[in-house]
Image (tube, rainbow, N blue to C red; front, side, top):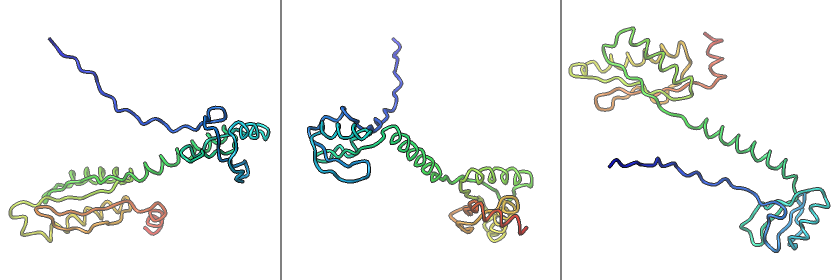
Length: 197
């Protein structure tokens, strides 16, 4: 008999919501008015009536406080501003997610393959990722480590001629490999680079 398996989906955390007006169940609340002035502790019903009289919603902003803290707000405007802040935070978090992409060279790499890897490196850099340039050294090639380093530096310079980069880690030998890490220079620096070229 064939077994069937249900695909498991990752459960998302529930989105935080604010209680508004009659959704607030606490008998008393600590009130902050529309000007940011603390009015002290009031019966929830009285606070709601006061907010209504002033043309505002009563929004629970600190539900875990004792008693909960509410504020007089235009809830529609409040939700709009809150969503803008969340969106800005998501964009900033995405910008911070910088990956390190590897470009692998060999000691005897041909010009065509070198050009292919150069284009791949530039594509990574344009995506705001860092690039780790690796060259594997085998057998007798270890006798020519200085020449291998020069080849790596020449490759980085060829990238720099087309797309300005900065070096985060100079060429170093780690085991049987030479490694260097580069990243795109800031936009204003790139413009200076082009104007001086």
